[in-house]
Length: 309
Ligand SMILES: C[S@@+](CC[C@H](N)C(=O)[O-])C[C@H]1O[C@@H](n2cnc3c(N)ncnc32)[C@H](O)[C@@H]1O
Image: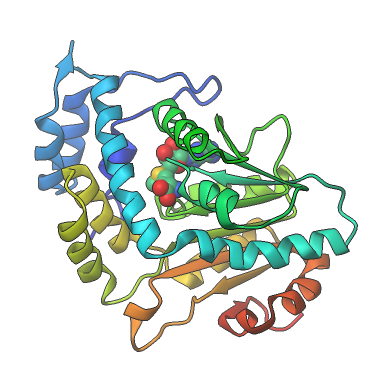
């Protein structure tokens, strides 16, 4: 894999950075870029898509993304992404309360897609009445579907078309699932630094853990459970592009020098199929000791950068 390879889903949509209005994307530019990078299969997928005046048609692209995200939800269920977030979030919220941080505690899911994790937390998380759950995504079609699903399930959570780092009512804690590998190098640094600038008090970013088995596992899962060609392509590439724990924690330490940075399940294991995800953790230094105590047994699976508190 080359570092320049990109998921199709990152190339076929573009948003104005301020208004988040959709911007036109020329199919031939995307196809030429994918071909030039050696991503022939991805180029053939996009080359089949319809255009109007050479531009990809938003409704068609969003239909593909919706199907891909519905299929992605199968992966979220399989890998219990809701529980994974809740097991870290509950102790973190307990520490914020104990430290006297004023409620409400706004938990913002960055790049929430169809909102699986936010909806799971609202349904099963038991986080308390002082917690607000908000999912943010640039894509209005995904946000509309997330809202409809939450409404059908009668859940206390919200979804907004918004840049999660530019909210009028900022986050207390940021979470995300399967998002951070989309950001590399200076973009990854900027993604992490934005949270300290908000300023939030902590973040929990879960993503695929790289291992020799991850690409094979992703291929098997995507053959078995995914039908949309974009979903199959991007899912397998995501496993190949997953960040090493060391890169995540080093970048986070540089971006947030006054925070404690840890990795849950970042350590390489001999049987990687048992731990398919890892979580980058950032907390203000003052919260770290209380958080470690509240984590109880889970704490042994976290490696803190720079060692003990
Ligand atoms: C891989 S998808 C989301 C997957 C979703 N978390 C899930 O597990 O189903 C990544 C999404 O992140 C969104 N995104 C990236 N940066 C964002 C930001 N700063 N604010 C809001 N959405 C963002 C993109 O619009 C895209 O839809």
